[in-house]
Image 1 (cartoon, chains in turn orange, yellow):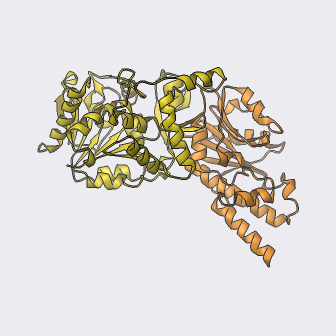
Image 2: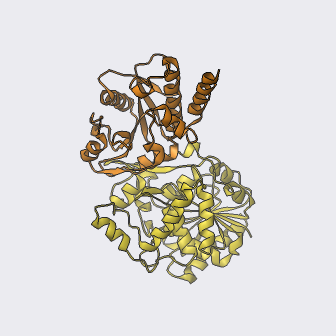
Length: 197
Length: 308
């Protein structure tokens, strides 16, 4: 049964969402996280790595040690391994509001022997990883990271649209609204209602 | 007489050809395993459903034991030449089917509806159902690590012993439309000679299917996939030896505890001791031609009709 790690920084890193008021931005971030976690829970145990306190999410919370996404993922993987969770290990970004259990199981099912499967964003960053073993992980995030992860071990790439479409801007969210999970759609509706008021 | 059959790929498919000959195929519903489905080259491949469909359409390659007869490999050779993924053997004709399936799935049709459409186009007279429209994937735990089913089965040539099998997604999965209805409407339920762990197991793991079988009011007959304790093809014998503690008919029947009323097995497996409530039916189960397939299917129907 796959184990899932989701690093969650809220929308801190989303500078392009910065024109939204802080509370709205936080609500959108948590709504996307809720959708991602809901999909992940069908696949296996879920570990969310975050600095946020009191996050209401149906997952095991792991304290983000700081030092960026790579360190956060490492902490999540270590916590999952320490708890005896089985491989393969999925690492799924929290800004993929369209992701479904089907996408995640297809990714986990694509892991080659001793290697990894990944889904890259259109800009070449890495949206999701499936690792045959937790030790395989290296903190390679950043621009062009998909290439670096692919070079790490035997790898397969999965172009599932729901794993490719991440959210950096409000326009991304509006564009993906039809496919997004229920929490994200509700958050967007509240945002619109607020704007209209 | 209405028959509902749960089936994996090759062995099950071979048996179903005989079954479709001895019952009115319009009264036959096959529930196929989808937990060894995979995404490869951007395509959704359902190996077990396809093995059943090809077998029942008379398109299967009997000699190779999988895939389509008269197959060619031009596309895959091209893929390999371009540095693409060629570990999963997709023939040219087979690829045509995966292209159509993938397109229909992308248009939003559930797998069961896509399967029905493909089965009709292939001229199948029986009903072929995906066990579920929800995603379920089998993972095998081995001393060399945990692998997705196809990585272990194809890429590693199922060389690793298996310590445990997991059906990810199964607890949340619902039976596809028609599956429970077919089981409930059947006069006979058959578990085909497929691997109990990686073919029949993931079907039974889908919420509601095991319960439908456990609550049956008609006989359920399983056919052992082993002859003389050995698998005709594939890793079923090694898996049973390691996970069930042996390869006798009793060990096969134990995989289906509470779900079967009779086990059909080969005379080479005598003497055999079965769990209480499971009637032994001894025959010859090796299927080498149409006549032997039909005879085995008839034996299974007879077993179901015989007084308990």
